Length: 412
Ligand code: PMP
Image (cartoon, rainbow, N blue to C red; front, side):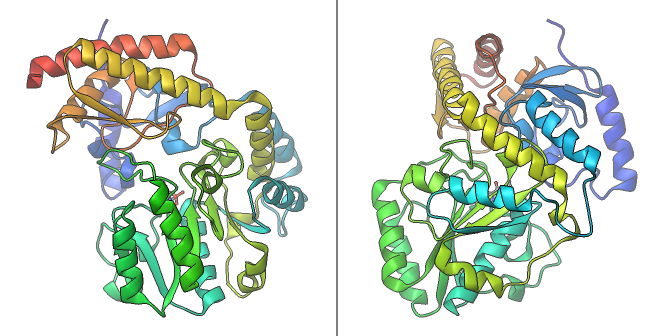
């Protein structure tokens, strides 16, 4: 096959650097991929496919970093969004979908009695830790080292311009390590408002880790005993593993839950939810944003939740992901390349043995991108329900060739 080239993408990227600091900022920059082997800009998408500005077509395993669960331009979601669009989107007051969506979420997510709406994951993780502080009257938030909870000041790990004081009262522990959690609880005893956790460990640049039973038990027990709240950051996993929330899936006794990404299949909305007894604390917290109230994403969310349930999308992405993971394992073994597949099948990740600097990953993923398969060398992938068995078969064909090239480049 003719390998893809990216002339227009990189011309535009070069031009972007004149007008935008860094050209493209955050993890969407081509520098966070394999520079030169991936596009920089996408012109359209449909189902599980995207097309870049040079006209190259990809089967996309990043799903816009997790929003696209049902497939791009899903007819039922687009229809619901269009119907609301025809009535208007952003009003002076919330739309009449405010109550239906709040009721729907409260009826869906286990043990949650109320919810608030924002736009991005960062809005609601920041809100949730604020509610934890308001409810307990304490300041300290426990965070797993290396976990990503958004771009707000308290949880930024990169970049300049944020005074250290704005990140104070945050203390770290090692995910999946009950002893280390006990250590930080001992050290901070008396001032702990909450612990914020992703349902499983899905930090960039490492294999994913499912929580051990003993870790989950320790989180639940310590929280009850010490009187701090468990905040589950379900932004990335939410509605991919279990309709009732990933806290239920893994057994966390969550006091607060945060959702975003997949809940509206790509429309901008996020939600924080809490136990009924935290509602009066939530009422004391200031939270607003001009676009938090716009109606179209509410319509899209209602339709997305209905469609995930009606179509069995969670089981489907689990099955497709399992096929992908098993196929990759086999293809790698066939080429005598040692890889590790990690995470739940709905959001798998792959790393290579003896690849500290991720050079093999970058090479493999870059070669796959040039052949129409969009993986990510550093960040977990996402499986979407619009993929077909043929798409997986095509993906594995390309993967086999790229394993062969990786072996040739780096040895076994
Ligand atoms: N928490 C987690 C676990 C995330 O993956 C992300 C986004 N990658 C966020 C929070 C922040 O969400 P957003 O980028 O929508 O602000």
